[in-house]
Length: 476
Picture 1: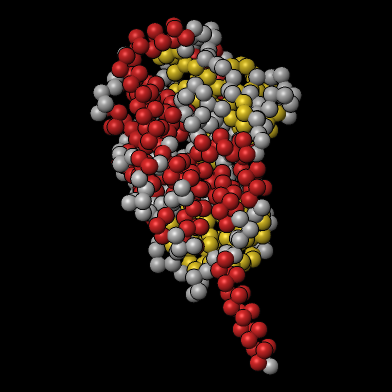
Picture 2: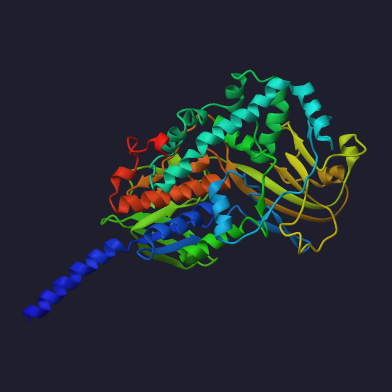
């Protein structure tokens, strides 16, 4: 009997240790932030963690494709910057092919005329650019490169497995001015640098309109990310960018639950109870318990969000207003007379927020090899669905139409409170990063930061969490 008691005591002891070494982790959201976090968690914990990812729709989130006449087109995040290390590494890791966008001329339209139009000859384009905007405007692109250099320091830091509990801390570590850039409009920031108002009102604003559907009143940091997205060497993934989150999820070996998480409840023992509707219907409510929870979906103001129960902190303060976007794919022939011209460029940017569309461009399928349609397809970004009247004005005729309405990115108003990555003990929020800027790489950086944060805090590696004395930039 004594031997049996000793055995039971030892079994209980070792079971407690095993439970501590093998946390149950839930990731709520299957976009690039959630799937990259799942992948990095698996790399850190290896087989000593049980991962479950919840997604109510499709894996990829706002990385999605739309079927137009048998071909698929990028409906969400479309292009990736060459310096985006995580996205480059993911593509290599998953054995995916890279495709460059088809070369096309662009023009900036103000609602009455094209104020700037690219030429087929580069030297003519440069001459027109300098004539209209002045040589000082070239300094903007040097500034973007300088900012990118500071931004890229985060990669070496993450390689050394350091993590941040706050978005503000991460931005300040990259560059002390980054956090301030989230609290000041891009217009005010660039005006201090003495760029011409014409340059800001036309070229800079048109870039922000196509990337974020917003004017130069967006925050300076979001504006920097937007301007970086005007690089000539952008690329995408053959077959669609959503193949990256799909591949990362497979690599993470996480259990996948299709359902809508409705509540995260803090239990007395510090664990979390997740209530979720299993499947597509909202009839079968289930509950599961986890040691660590990662919220990898945005908390959107005036929208249906996760309910947080038994927390002293009011998570409503972290909800943000998101900017609506309508993506319309049109098969047809563009009407140059709508722009009072005989011919128009393949990519039309706008610099006025009062127009019926933000941008209009001819696009190619995500896989040219499998292309079935011979018709031209145009992608139109707008804040509201295009009316039949607008479509008849812009196009001579249409043979097909597909439309997707979604909340694409935060409304970058300033000043803005930046949410933390750490909401509560072992409760994390990857989408905090979107309040600085929304981009695939930003989400991947947040995914790795949260994975490192969860791992370090679980193993009490306090020296690798917000320990600025250890985070020497010069050594990295």
